[in-house]
Picture 1 (cartoon, rainbow over the protein chains, first blue to last red):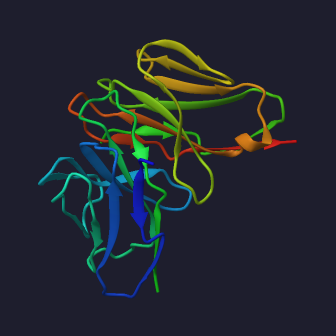
Picture 2 (cartoon, rainbow over the protein chains, first blue to last red):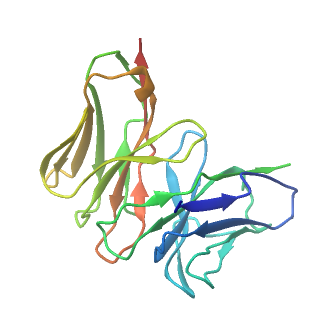
Length: 114
Length: 112
């Protein structure tokens, strides 16, 4: 079945470590997004990419990095510069540019700093 | 900074009642409006989307949009305990295909 796969579902990071969250989609969608959600809060945009080899910073990009080498894949690296990374991370995609496209979400990844 | 505002709740209604969830947005250029339902620990799932002023109905759900007032709402008729969740309002920023901007969500509790 088509969909968005995020892995791992749960991840523990030590202080000072970089970690990478995987996001793969087989929906042939052009645009992909990373959101962060803190408890009791809405979704905040970290990065998004509308085409391969191009991506844009969202509202809270500091301490994160992404790449978009393939249409299907949009991994997110949480670097040691991100001081408070414990959160629920959601990857999403839409079929193409434009405002009338429904956004599809993966199941999310929980990151905890230990 | 473009913003989407929602009352965080909790909004409590008895089973069978109508739940009314409200959302305002700051960007007058917004074109598309979405309501997502999110259960605790899960990813959001799409409930409704609306693009034009007025009402749009889908089963027990009705979305209402008033662009002049920059206001969008979601009505849930015959509320069920399974409707208990956080409801997120999301707005598209502009026509360039940038990502949705989400509100913080309203927590709905339906008591049986």
